[in-house]
Structure formats: C-alpha cells, structure tokens
Length: 72
Image (cartoon, rainbow, N blue to C red; front, side, top):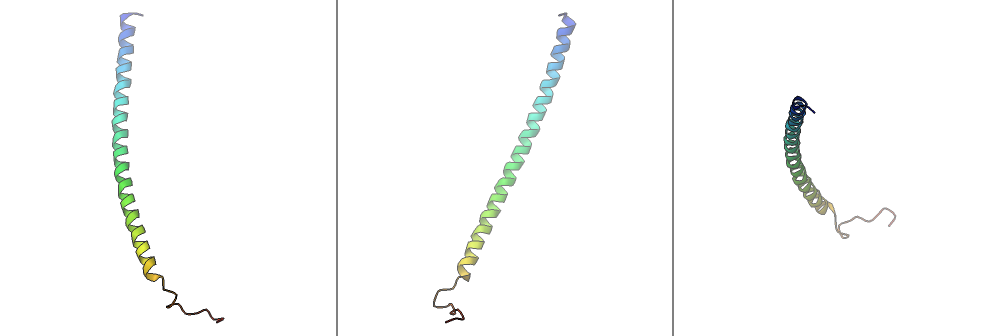
C-alpha cells in the first residue's frame, strides 16, 4: 500500500468513528428520555392502581348490608 492509500483508509476510519460517536450520543439521549418516560408512566400506573383499590374497597358491602337474592 502506498502512503496515499493508508491516508485515505485512515480518513475513512476517522469518518466512520465520528459517525459512530454521534450515533452513540443520539442513542444515549433517546435512552435517557425513554427512561424518564417509563418512570413517569410507572408512577401514574401506581397512582391509578392505588385509586382503583381504594374505590373497590369502598364499593364492597358487607353481608349484612347486602339485600338477599329474589329467590329467598
């Protein structure tokens, strides 16, 4: 290989490396945003589940409060 060929290959490798570094940075930013979104969704889901459980416990009547079925 001549010196020029080596320089061309080095330039190509440097260019590829720069694109890879940029891609890694972009992926890292996307991952951080997805992590933040996931944590928000998890908090909202927990709040909704707690609210649902609270609503269920208030709607369940005791056996004494229940009216008997029509066939009694």
